Amino acid sequence: MSWQERTKEKMLHLKLPTDPRWVGIAQMQIEDILVDHAYCEQKAASSCISLILRFHDLEQLVDTLTPIVAEEWGHFERVMEQLRKRNLKFKEPRKDEYVAKLNQFVKKGGNRKQQLTEVLLLNALIEARSCERFKLLSKQIQDQELQRFYYELMISEAGHYVTFIELAKHYQDESLVNQRWQEWLEYEAQVLKNMEIRGDRMH
Ligand SMILES: [Fe+2]
Ligand SMILES: [Fe+2]
Image 1 (cartoon, rainbow, N blue to C red):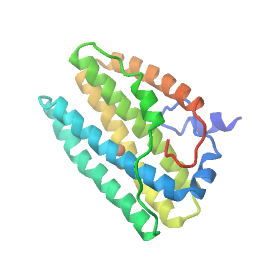
Image 2 (tube, protein in one colour):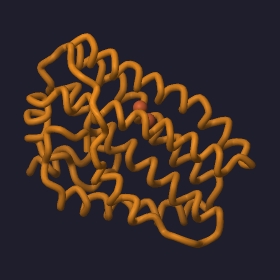
Image 3 (cartoon, helix red, strand yellow):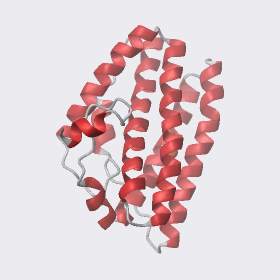
Image 4 (cartoon, helix red, strand yellow):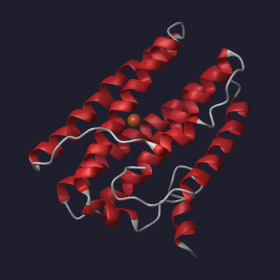
C-alpha cells in the first residue's frame, strides 16, 4: 500500500495527502513556517470577520463565527509567542499561492445562498488542509513544545472544519453541499499536486 493510500483514511476526506518529505523540509525553515503560519491565522480571523460583515443578516452564521474570530486571533498570538521565545523574527507576508489558486475555483454569480456555500466550503477546505499539516507537524517535528502546540491547533482547526461544513448545510440543501464539496476536494488535490513542496509555507 502506498503512503497516499495509508494516510487517506485519516485525512478529513482530502484527496491527496501531503508529501511525507514536507515536515523534514519545513522544520529546517521553522522561522519561515511560523511566520507563514501566523499569517494563516490572521487570514482565518479576517475571513470570518468578512463573512460576518457580508452575511450580517444570518443570525446563526454571525453567532457561530464570532467566537471563532477570537479563537483564530488567539492562535495568531500563540504563533507570535513561539516566534518570540525562539528569537525569530516576524516578517512581511508572502504571496499565498495556495489560497490564490483556491480562490480561482469560487463560482462567481449565482444567488446569495450559492455564494455563501462557496465561501464556507473554501474556508472548510483550508481548515482541513491546515489540520492535516498540523497533524503531521505534531507527530513528526523534533521540537517537543511545537509537537504539543501543533497537536492543540490540529484539534481546534478540525472543529472549525466541521463548523464550516455544518453552516453550509444549515443554509443550503445538503445534497448540493455534498456534491460541491466533492468538486472542491478534487480541485484542491489538483492544486496541491501541481505545487512544488516548500519548507517555507504552511500550504
Ligand atoms: Fe487557527
Ligand atoms: Fe481555524
